[in-house]
Image (tube, rainbow, N blue to C red; front, side, top):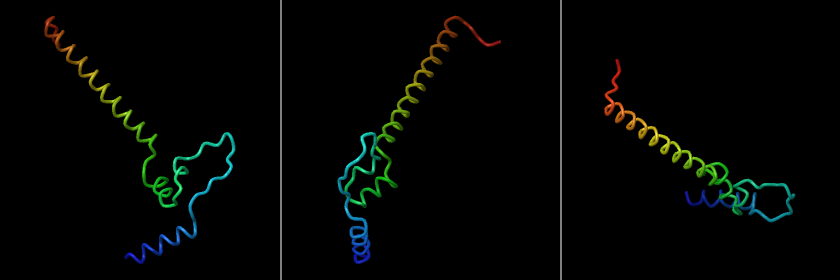
Length: 91
């Protein structure tokens, strides 16, 4: 098993090699996986792990939905309290 890992690693390192710096155009925005130098890390960043920006947006959405849910529950409690205080009942 270790020999297989060694062979795969050698093929990747000899075939692909590490990333090198080169000139880039002014308006080019690098992808999130292009910041890694090692080819295995680049592969993991590109295909396996979610980018930081995407994880951040997902967490913001979760916080937003929780806040909206809490506001709705507070409004429902206020409505029930006012109905009880004023004696408003459904038909």
